[in-house]
Image (cartoon, rainbow, N blue to C red; front, side, top):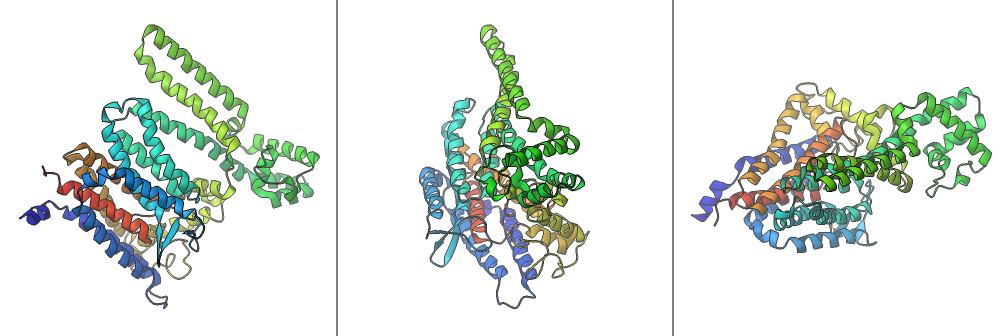
Length: 506
């Protein structure tokens, strides 16, 4: 009788949606490899991963989610140990074609530890937010959640895997919001992080796009010696001109002569004044930024004193944002001066703004994926007819992993993409419903954290493929090739099912 009652409580539509998307992924991988006679390829492995994932989903659904919560700290610590293990030579390894040491090998099986760290972090955050539910309006209460998230982010950045590390932040802010944190505190923290990183990234992006203008100016002025040096140094000229070599020796670029440097500075300043946008000219001037930041902090401080003296609580809604804005601007200056942004990192994160400016790397991926999606038109080219995403060396790089949605869209068109997106989005939406209907606070926060985890993977991946977001290496959950993310995602769905199954339990 208990089994019958539990079967009635199962969310069959959620289970069907997961299986449908997994099958779409296997089918897409099969169409990419059907004409390559190398035996069973990635589609076959993906099918095996899907079956293993279903087994884990069933197992997690059978386990009481409250029991999982009681072991949250141990699960989190185990995930951290696995992350640290990836950094140890001989244990962690870097698969061919990958840019980060994110895997460890367990016998013949490789595992990407950062994927399971995401789920472990969600579990611990949910448990902490329940324990501190009454204190969530205090800013000091938010320190521990940030520490919980920043520790695994730190180890993942050491691999280095920037895209996976950044994916922790949307989960954190979503859970803080649902956990009852002050929206003003959350918004302020978002602004702090966004401005602190956004301004330096915009400056670096603008400098890279101005480099062709510098070269063109040198050609017109017939300064062949400088033209040769800048052509060889490329993006390295900027830190050298600014006196922050960041480990780049000027002797390697030929720009060690002070007279050459001074001449090049004058030319670059001329190009910036003539070709640079007003926004870039303002943000590139560090004195303006420091002055603006200090003024805003002083205004905020004056308002705080007024609030203390006269008890005008409404001023709080003004002095917190103004103060955070000032701190964020000063923080952006510190970040710009201290963090050595590599050219490939800047291109990867900013190429979506203007892919035509970057002919290789992330720019090439975006310029290839968008035409592939568009070429499918309404009904697609047909299964097995994806010219841009099939074969041993497809026109769209990573068409089986991060850009698998482009392959599906090319073959099935707008119609097939809408169907896929319907079932993809059904997964977090059903999870959100389970969160609202949970019998306790922990179940609600746990389900909502998993919803955030899945939703942001879906939204970010599709946004990347159609050119709306920067290329960050985020897989499409349940569909992109890879066993670790697949199994982790299906375990997460199993936990959602566990919350639903125990909705009416005593």
